[in-house]
Length: 365
Ligand SMILES: [Zn+2]
Image 1 (cartoon, rainbow, N blue to C red):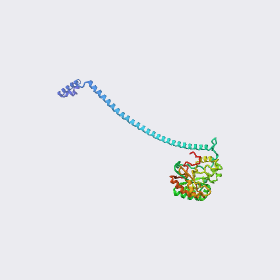
Image 2: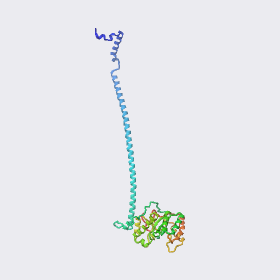
Image 3: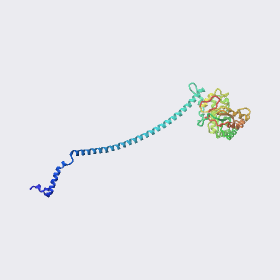
């Protein structure tokens, strides 16, 4: 007996089942002839493969593009950060440049001022041809005018009342009248008068009331004051220090005794003007006068009429005196103030910002 046949399960099945299995086998062996043709199958498979690759490529592309966009954004952010940093540095550099330009302008202004002084020294023949300056420029190193940073007055109907040779008891009356009219004025004091205790208080009163306390030499002795440039400097530096000692304020305005050009200073006035200008001081002569420096006092009405001769011009500097013998000058003051007020003038104290009124040798500014 065939041993394998004993274990053949088919041999044990019913006949009908064996038949249908045979038919199925036949059908199966015939299937390739009736199924999908091979080329089409290959084409579909290839298409599927291509589609698969295409989809994969598209997915890759989209991921890559997102990556690229992200990178681009990051680069843009970085560039913007760099750009704002550069802008900040540029702003800083611009600010530095502006500061440097300002400093340059300041130094140029200083240089121009120094050049003015050099020109002035040359003009008044103070400097030697080799450029050396006189030894008196080294004297009184503390005798320099304080810097002026206030207003400038270079025109207009402005009246400057000035009182020379005080202080005295008349100064009190002048101060009262100025206060009553609300007017500021200038007092060119003399050291010998200013030394008296009562007059020290008057100097303080002048400063406290907002008037200008100015210098008019220590002795008012023409021969002494104009003996030399050195002598002039000694007279004025002494008064300068005294005014500061008494009032706590340094004067920067001065007036020559007898005016800048007089019978005593012809040999020295150019050098004095140059040297005093170099030290920052400003002097004023006058263009209207009370004509009150007379042996006998003049009537107040005559004095007022003379003072008002300045009406019509710009920047009127009126010379008067508040020394002890000049009572009628004080009497004339209300008429003088009202006369200028009625003519449309305002009043001001003199200061370094006022264009100097001088006798014929204007100081270059
Ligand atoms: Zn005088």
